Length: 228
Ligand code: ADP
Ligand code: ADP
Image (tube, rainbow, N blue to C red; front, side, top):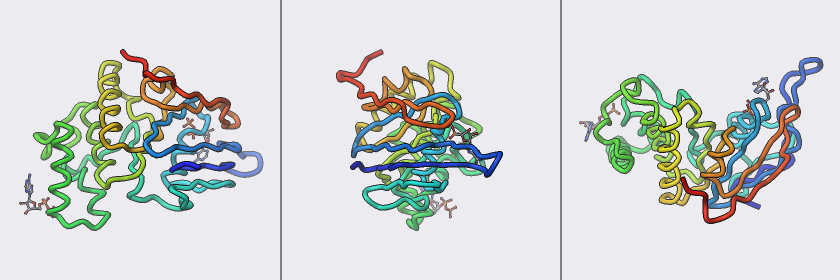
């Protein structure tokens, strides 16, 4: 049992001759406050699994639960960060962070206060009225993370969030994410195909294989964590 519980999950796309088994009988869990990575080659079903936990995709068999409740749709209890397009280009930085709070029905003054406090924490408050296109890739992803945290979710779901960044920025972002994770005491399910990144960040790693997508190993990362 975990905060996130995926049990005997199967996902197939298409039918008959075009049938693809994207995920085959996968079970995994994420404990409260735990940082868990999902690694494996392209096409092994990582994004599909994360999309199910996010509530964007329905499984063909098995189920996914959050805190004991079946996941059927997206919700503010799960913050999601993607590799790209995490921000709305037509909204200012602050409006991006406020977005989820607006969906959650918070009034403008509360949205504004919450968003500004989070931006301050991320040292991005001076950019609140900038637009995403005016910022570097690393800054955009920092704002993406802040935006995902705005509704105080129980878990962060991250799909290769640093995949498009250069090595140097990526390393900085890994450290920032570690700080955020410790500060917010939040559970994280993190997708990467970079084994080094997963070892640096995670408590536990699930290793997947493709065609069909299965978990072939589970690794507990020993403490103390490797340092750079
Ligand atoms: P990963 O994130 O590990 O790269 P994905 O979860 O994106 O893997 O994809 C797993 C498999 O499912 C791949 O073969 C992919 O082509 C297929 N797939 C994913 N989404 C869809 C979809 N919406 N329709 C058809 N096939 C899909
Ligand atoms: P809306 O969501 O309706 O577009 P805005 O966020 O543009 O609203 O503005 C809502 C209120 O917040 C306005 O009264 C505005 O003056 C105030 N406001 C906007 N930006 C800031 C800021 N940086 N600091 C404090 N208050 C602000």
